[in-house]
Image 1: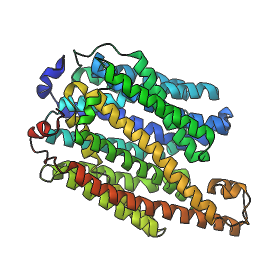
Image 2 (image 1 turned 135 degrees about the vertical axis):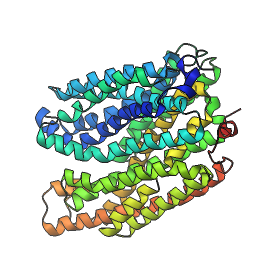
Image 3 (image 1 turned 180 degrees about the vertical axis):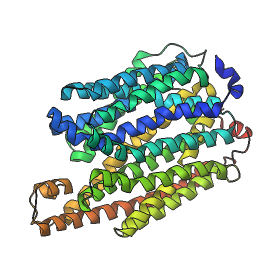
Image 4 (image 1 turned 60 degrees about the vertical axis):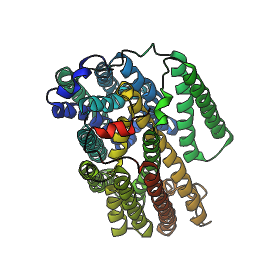
Amino acid sequence: MIEGDSARASTVPRPWLGLMVLALPTLLLALDVSVLFLALPHLSADLGANGTQQLWIMDIYGFMIAGLLVTMGTLGDRIGRRKLLMIGAAAFGVASILAAFSTSTEMLIASRAFLGIAGATLMPSTMALISTMFPDPGQRASALGVWLSCFLGGTALGPLVGGVLVEAFWWGAAFLLGVPIMALLLVAAPRLLPECRDPRAGNLDLRSVLLSLAAILPVVYGLKELARIGLTAPTLLTLSVGLIAGVIFVRRQRRLASPLLNLSLFASRSFSAALLVGLMVGAMVGGMFLLVAQHIQLVEGRTPVEAGLWLVPGSLAMAASSLLVPRLARTIRPARVIAGGLLISAAGFGLMSYGNGVFLTVGFIVANVGLGPLALTYDLVLGSAPSANAGAASSLNETSGELGLALGIAGMGSLAIAVYRGEAPASLPEAARENLAAAVAADLPADLLNTARNAFDVAMHVAAAFGTGVFTVLALVTILLLRHVPPSRSSEHLATITPS
């Protein structure tokens, strides 16, 4: 039983207006990640950030979000999800101002870390509140489709918005986007969002919080380092530390009367399978998105704003697909809808593996259309969890996505680098044989630069072909693991997939 306004969740007035309020932080978090790609060169020149500091400016935000999602999702179940959302929104607004007016690299890195901590409160809170406001599976699937389309829309608009703001004002303007959005959320949330918490939850176990950080942060950092420098002794040690801490964390959760993470959630096959699909899809998409973005700028020579415009159609196609999918899931089993989408993405990756130009453009859009059914995996995660654990379930879903992104960048990035080095001719300078960015920066003669670009093309095509195979296999796995889940036409769907 859930305490507070959530007991009247089905009668909350204007739930769809409340969904629009929840879309605000979702849109902002997506924007905040992508706008920095275009602001980084300008702020680095202004603050004098070296290469290592630039990496920390980019990565610390994601590290803090990944490390604290589980803690914040569970904390919302204890103190109230709306309360946590509003605390996070206020903190995010303050951190945005600090980041925008940073006077040193160290201040900006600290501000980005603060932004990550605040951001970790927002995503699980929004998803958990959606499960409260839309208890009917059909409506919840539609609401999650809208939620996902807002996230994807923010991802699509981020590069374009960032380019315009940086060119029109200064790099700090990209961070100030968060201030008016969070102010609006703080005004609207008490009026349109219900409060809900688990009255039976015990105190937050601080040792479990530290263990979760010790497990997640080294794994995410190790995967990123694996993509950047390959498998080295320090990278292997970092990953090992994270895995060992994860084992200790799991053993502790089994002993606690009120664990930080309710491991019984994984007893539901729907829950576990949906997390697996989300993890693998995130890995493939994250890795390929990185390679495509590099291709557009380094091979085709487009400006950041032009690259942002090129990416918009694919992201909008995914957003439109995510809105259509819930309608299909009312009459077609989710396993078939998700598997169908994965096969469409496989076809898109296949086109991208074939060549550049039209093949790359059309393939990228087709691959994104197939990702729309990912909204159903979010629905399965929330629908499979008891309402008391909605925050924890949401945080696991987001953590799965963060880990998938890091895994994809590491895996697909390492594959592409290996192929690039194998294809790059010996006539290239040593630095240029490491990656295409170094080759472009080296101001090579046109013929040598073209050979480097051709080597990168081969690497990208091999990575896309690998993605085709992974999506095809994943579609078959989805059919096997989720074939028991019925269409989401009624609330009976909940009883079918709720763990015993």
